[in-house]
Image (cartoon, rainbow, N blue to C red; front, top):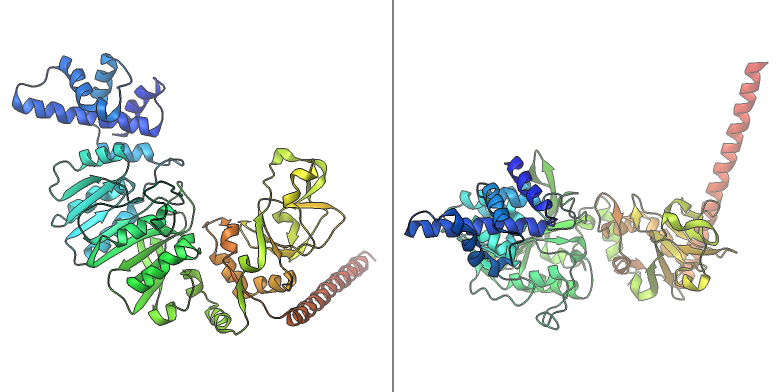
Length: 532
């Protein structure tokens, strides 16, 4: 089969028809033509080959546009494609397409089947169903007595799904979008959704009609309205859905107050690679209020998702949290986090007490001898900034003034494999932050060193990590950092804690240096004795 698919691709490549969409479009054209040929053949003798080209033009060009070739080229493609399995073709075409459509892995399809099996349901809605092509046919065949409705906002994918499930009495395919007013005319026992991540929508169908302009937020709002009285919605969302403020916060509050948040599970690292490496969660939402929420991690074991680290938390306890970061609720530092939550010390979000921005993107080709020093991850060690190995660039100061580091700026690494925090002290050098650094510039009455100490604590470092959008490689967004709560004591208490910290840190460093010096001296004395 793969060899046939490869030949079909090559025929199109030779004519510079190369995009994934174009490849799938021409296969759909072949399949639509084949369906029409069989329909005509049922009414009279088999369709003559010379009439096949005209049949294709009449049946497909209004839907798919003009065929990119002549009669002979169409016959060539038709002979290659008529026996190729459409599902396999689409999967192979979009497989590993970093810039294209997400294809959910087989183990997610298996988990979807487990959800269907474990709930007493009659009908299921699967949105943007083309993303679930891997295993979708098998899932539907497994549950023959359940009615499935599949949607796609993409016209080509709608045609593909319609062809794929032609003849399935239990399947209805609809061409509609879950990212604007959803007119579907029925409610469902179960809704399964893998929405688009991170799209900001500005159409008239969206503006002022939803709590957020974000695609995943709009999808959730729409789908909550179509779950039946005892129905459930299982939706996969990016990390920021669980902690971002404004629209996402309003959606979370609505779910808590009007629906039942049954479960939140983290998905394993790399679930949707190579399409995206962002951290994702699966939310289970019921149309009925619940008394507790189940938290945990989905782990991939022998190509099957297994629920691990399960923990149930009462609705009353869960409501004490302003967001849904599972990492905090499952953290080994839970006692310390609870202590932080219950502390009477005033807490503020960083965005309320500081200006926050990311540094400048500096490419390797930009690094050259110059007067502008660039702070990067490697220049921060053990909470201190080292200037001796900083890269420099040659640039006019006025062009990069907005990235200049000022005295007492708090800097936090936002990429890489580990969190680093330091306070920048005034220097005779002109220093800017790189794009791997987030700069936090506090208002008066907030000491950078004081917040740095909190960020280095077990609670602070756990909170920072919980804002990571990436999985294997850290990726923290400045807006997300702004949502981080920090305890802010009065200025006199801050000064006392910072002074004590700095004194003890200096003593620690001096002690280490003396011990290292003593050890080197004694080693040399021992070496000398050996040579005597």
